[in-house]
Image (cartoon, rainbow, N blue to C red; front, side, top):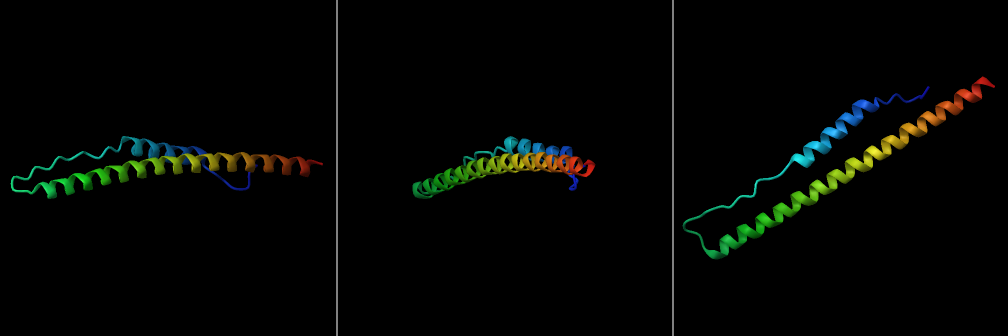
Length: 94
């Protein structure tokens, strides 16, 4: 019997929800229209939007990687905890 109680299904559900919500997030690409704007200001807005889109994409990529790494570590921890508990039970039966 493992010493540390892990509700694996609850954790998996939370990580699945995080992954699904992250994958479903798609910021709307705005195309602002200004009647009395200079070309320089419009270029600035376009560059700002491009940087924002890249930042959101990079954030989503890193968040999905963190979710994947964390879930992998949790699975490894659960497996190790079960092995240790099994070994401990075997030692106590001797």
